[in-house]
Picture 1 (spheres, one colour):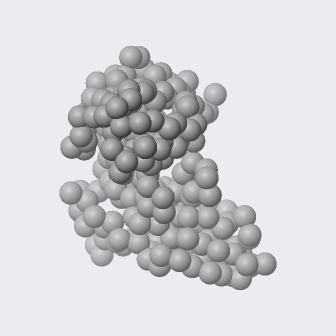
Picture 2: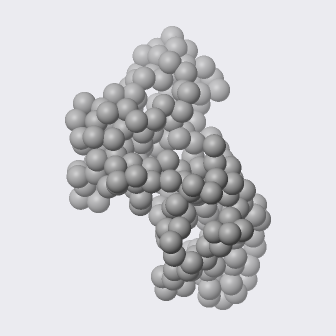
Length: 114
Length: 111
């Protein structure tokens, strides 16, 4: 099955700086790579996702890059704000037209200090 | 309506009890999922339903029994659970296999 490794496990950044979280996956059949943000006591929320036929995607301050050859993908958050503090999970998996199966990384606790 | 609603929010049960978790979505999504999340850990997939049929059972013990009565509802029936089953149980739905929407979860404690 799919195995996803995520680093770092914790990340402290000053407000306004950038944050980068990296993930690797093992199954070359994986074709879908979402990122979820989970605040304390809340549900995981999708913040950005990328398919295997795309190398990079950006949405305002958030960007994701995918290197299929190396089986790496990364989340970049620019101009961090205190409200970016949360646990971020990467995931890798495959999808059909009807459903999908995701394997989540262990998570990164991001703390943004004012 | 862009929400996945789960009830109850909290549940405490003894090891001999029978209880059910409920999940509802009205986004027209055809896939629904149960995940289990322990504290400070990632969600772990338990079951996937597609078009009301069970597509994946991730070798979950039989004390957990899923049910999908219709395209909007997903239940998880619990019986004879163990204390190590205490966790946050998350329901999710998706249209196709992407962009899973998670519910807020049921925090389960087994005494």
